[in-house]
Length: 252
Image (tube, rainbow, N blue to C red):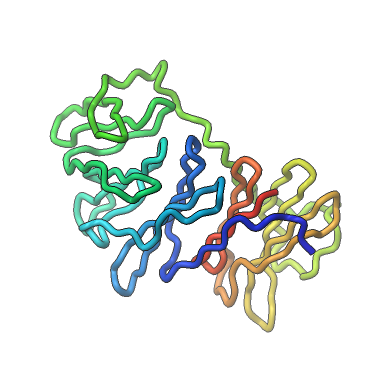
């Protein structure tokens, strides 16, 4: 049925908690959590070649860490101030291709990502002094300048929650709820929705080209409630999750 090219189909042992795209190197990062064992690991995947650079990557802190941002072939991780606090404190930078730990600083905290790199501050200093940091070394380069340190365009399109378009061709399943997640891209119309199958909710993905169904997949099975959007568009690629444990990337 499909005329689309499958670039990535990567399965993980835990749940995919968060994804981040480095829009400079076109690298996809994933944070995977195994809540029963309280373990967190990370993965890095090229959105150019489809190659998985690394997966099951861990740092010394095996639970209280997560993805902060990504920039120019570097994954920036954060630590937590305390086990009972959502506040972030401390940063570690990892090379996107080799997995090499480039640097870490337990006093740095992340503020925002700009076109020139990350803005950080030393959590020991009050009031905070925001600095542009070199993401490959952790060195503070200069003070944050909002005029030139602007937010980058990450080229990510998130689907909108909207009533099912009335001009969409008949779907293979009957939607459980009228609202769907929907986006139009070039000649493609992409929709994800929920439907009942054997009394259980499932989440489906459909892709139409010029109103012809060319691709379909099941995103979640045996779920108890309506799920949030499970796909995004990045440049000419569709990135989506399957049962929260597999990343699939299609070239459109």
